[in-house]
Image (cartoon, rainbow, N blue to C red; front, side):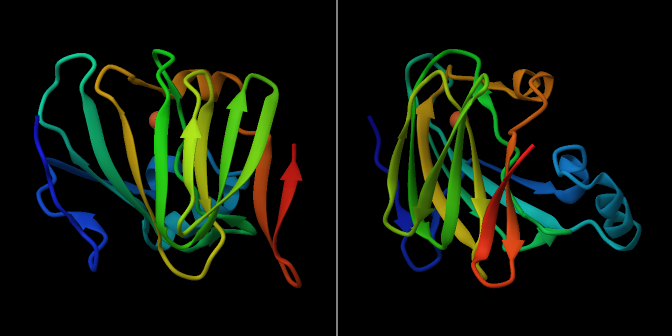
Length: 181
Ligand SMILES: [Fe+2]
């Protein structure tokens, strides 16, 4: 058993044990327009999101807490997103949005769902569904996720399926729109 503290002004765990940054270069094949990605990377390699994990045990069937800070930004017309993954084992996950305005994309083979994901929304992601968060706002989007230690990340399955067919693009009047491949 344990408790930890989440800093509600900084929106991060006080004592993460693992921190990593996903930069544009880590996601360059995930965006629709790889030419735009290459052009940006000639100049700089912006961070797209930061993940901070709090975990007390590697043993199966414990829980990992993590926070993700997804920056606002676009590649061409496509909004920044998290890479997205399926779990290796069909364990569910909780996402709790603490700040910002976004979209939660869920995918199970050819079936895709689009859910509003903004401050205050708590989402239950069933175990068999791949998941990605897109930031459609002008500020950072922060969410906490809680999932089993042995869920595992399966990035290859998503890649082999050609990624999410649903994309979230900028729109002059509406702010954003969905586009399906
Ligand atoms: Fe997950």
